[in-house]
Length: 173
Image (cartoon, rainbow, N blue to C red):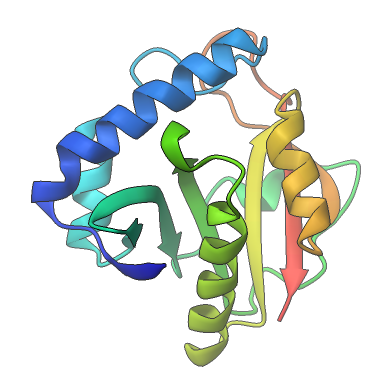
């Protein structure tokens, strides 16, 4: 599997993957990635910042995710726990990760996260942080299997009634 920065021409494939992920979450009772999130504009902004990556196999996009080295404004609000590192340490953040339905169960997410961890270490980051919806059992299980530690709940108000439904994970590099 190859990993590369995403390009605007990848958007149709990326948005198909996102639509499949939204359906998967909805079918599993997870109130995440709703109300048009994430949209093309977010991925384009990620691309402009050189942060959106795709996993490619045989010319098809198998997965997509964004890696950022900018401090995450919502992360200081962690509740009932704490990060493994201080907020002033350089950390990477993974956002908007999804795997194509055609590639599920083939280790794409694991490989993508491993790539991000190596890239983050090369950039001098001491850890990688991820957040997800508290009901996203698939993501939570995958993160634990990859050595990420549960750090607490996050207060993220994305729409009325969905605050404190997010959980935080971090892995030291």
